Length: 54
Ligand SMILES: [Zn+2]
Image (cartoon, rainbow, N blue to C red; front, side):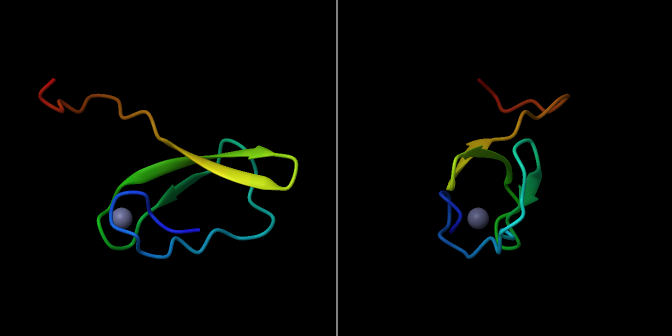
């Protein structure tokens, strides 16, 4: 699975579990793993205390 932002390989292990956080080695984005059966999805991890300028 690759980073949705920059397409770098995230190297998510087969035994990753829902709620685990992976960080992209390239752009530094954090993603939370969400598993549904054998499908692995990524969602943007909640960032607390960061101002994204919205
Ligand atoms: Zn990335």
